[in-house]
Image (tube, rainbow, N blue to C red):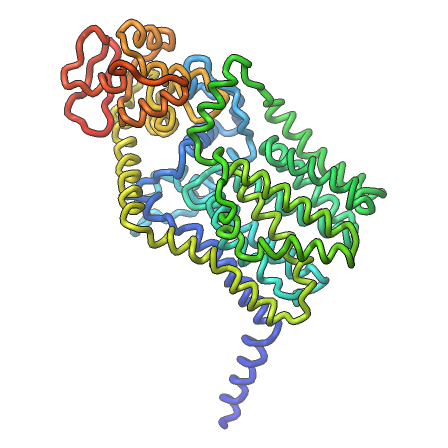
Length: 542
């Protein structure tokens, strides 16, 4: 063989395909997979050069980011764009708001001014909102890959790639960080991944570095939201007292506590205290309204857990229980944490990403039971069959699902068209179905009576009451009390059904939601406006 050719082949063999190089090929391959799969809904989010976000909460978050983008340095403590005219003191906080605005500034500076992508240059805030969660999801995958590779002190930990691979493809983790979903859940998962990973590292080798990383991550998560992080931190604290006591004693925990206090104090100084318990009179309404929200529903089919984590979800718990007999109570604590998050997920589907995250941290100790890395890797890949099947149904839906997605996409487009007809230099508060109100408010710049946050339950109740009104006097009283100038009519069947659940009563007479679609609405209703529309009708209050 020609010496130069022989030298090149040896360089390829020893360089590109060496043991160390294979690690980096796998590492970056998993990151590309994790980022790419989070754009599987690209055609649903970016339509005709315009962005349409995943759910109503996203538009509420983008309205906050819009105000900060227009006035940098602002901290939105009171949201006046929903529950008009009182507004709400939202549980949303500044970190994720500024993550969106900070990314928007970077996009604005770097986005091309010419070429096919230049059409999005006028929508940099929307673009940043669509990109922020996938990028945070990528950072989460980077941390999990680095953490799992070093679980046993090096890059060659058995089947280290299993953790980032499942993080890349697990449906609830993907949904939490998917393209077009600017929701603080993505930032929570990043903080909690670091926090829980630090807890596991400190159980084997306590260090100041991991103590500070864990404390800062827990504090950052609590600043972002006080619900899921507080429950998980409370669980970890109890498990520390019962099973992980050695890692919860000593001076290292003082560094952990100092790290925890830094974000908490910063959050208190920046955002203040945002705990606003709902009025007791709205308790029943909140329960009925919550029953109409998908993520608050129970997961009745226990088999869904394997669709999110693979078949190993049924093997890991008994494996950890057996391992606990050999390695002590530390492993037993992780089994308890997995069972707690699984129970919370069966209670409310919104816990599914946190359950999947905890399951990832249970894999490395479980893998220590298998001595052969190849057999372990093969078994793990086979166990992902339910996850693959779940993705197959999502990426290649049946005719009924495809039709439903098409109708949803058409509704989002028509919502934006209706909002554009509502734009005006004059402030025109409007009333609409609560699930449409955040997007209408964001695109029109007008405040809404209802919204998607539980803090504005009184506005949601009044909107439901309005759509079920059967007399002009009943409807006009709500409009006058709320200072409404515009009424947005949409799918009357859904408005009636949802409002009936929220109010806890059935419809006897023809409700306002149906009257709004009369071609010639009687003057007694005090409304006038569009007549030749089919999806959304915007009416002005006389």
